[in-house]
Length: 155
Image: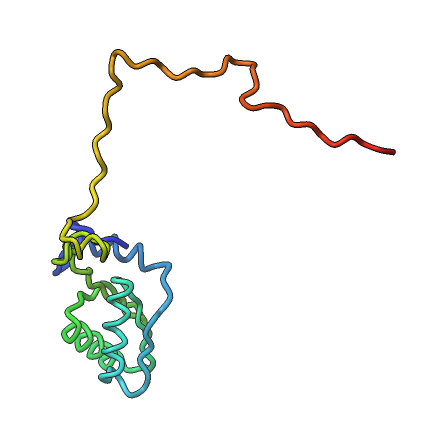
């Protein structure tokens, strides 16, 4: 999913609605057990957000207040925005940062870099001169190459 300028943090109702529609078909990628939101769970959530931007989290346990506390803790520690909470499923969103060009510049092969030359740029195409003869092309119906002989069949 590419970054979209419509989705900003905090989420607007329209962007939240669009994210809910996208998340409907997702499966949970992070599971929170009885121990709650531990450091390992938060680290895994960060990895999942970096890979997917929009993730579902399944929380085990029947205590609603504990699930709300997990959602708050995860969103604060990762910087993600809560999108939806339905029962034991949490949906959170964190847009990827916009990629900028690297400071390295274009790729230059080692041989060209050793000489001090920059990246190879194709030479501009020359326009055909007015005195140049057009290439001879075969007429339609004439073969482009000599016919080959097939070996004689013997019965």
